[in-house]
Image (cartoon, rainbow, N blue to C red; front, side, top):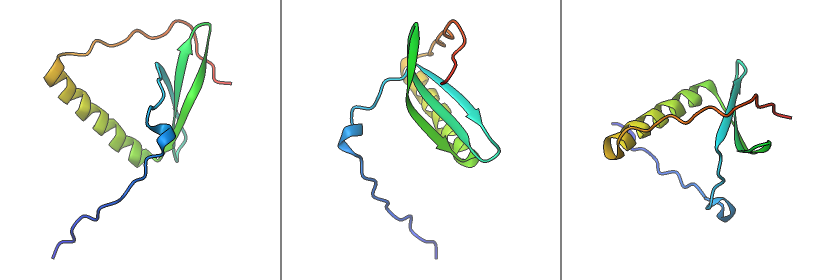
Length: 93
């Protein structure tokens, strides 16, 4: 007998409903985790507005989910043009 998948209730805090806008991201890693810093870049400066830290296994699932969604988006709306890299070197402080 196979177990039915359990429903997991996830609360969504009201203050996060609107999300935050990010136009850049820096990714780094250690052996145990990947660190993604989401940045709002408005030259001559910028600010990190979210930091997400995940395990390598979860990062692989994230990458697959993103690629899957990009493929579905492009099937529906056409090819996405890659954005230019921002000029200059970004240094997190």
